Image (cartoon, rainbow, N blue to C red; front, side, top):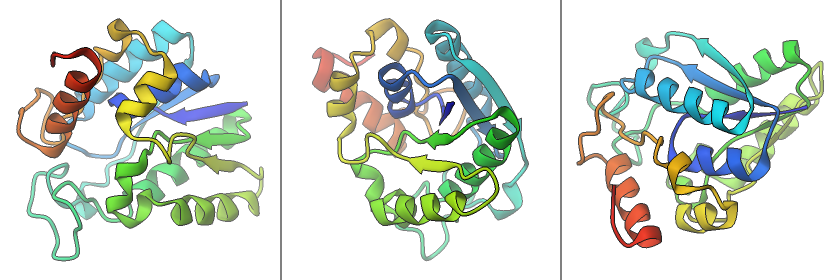
Length: 197
């Protein structure tokens, strides 16, 4: 059985539609946009017919940057960087997944996520090895890691009415229109549809 870390953003929604895993896992780890991400992910899981698991684990004490609502650390490669974020999320998803009988946890990472270390192929290879040697032998994959978001959306065939649920803002539950997530959302919708929504 496969599970997907479904954040409610464009990338994970497109992977959900393309790969059709049985389970979607959304994690409220203390990020500022958690409520909107959960709303988006819940609707998408319902539309696609996936079991939806929501996990709340408050990691705000270790947060940094736009997603945490404070200044990014000096080592941050991008303004929204949160230390070890993908490692935490994959670990939480695998821990919940083992209870549910999951054999694979997928993420929605795409090629542009390589701007930070935990969005690169070597990170996912390492996480796959770590979880595979533990009880349950859960595998980790990032099926869209070589694609841009535009390529992924086109390849997935996700309908516009499902993709429209995406919440990409890093700073809150209402799109700010200025953070890197909002700018990416605007650019991708313009590339695919000719207009942004």
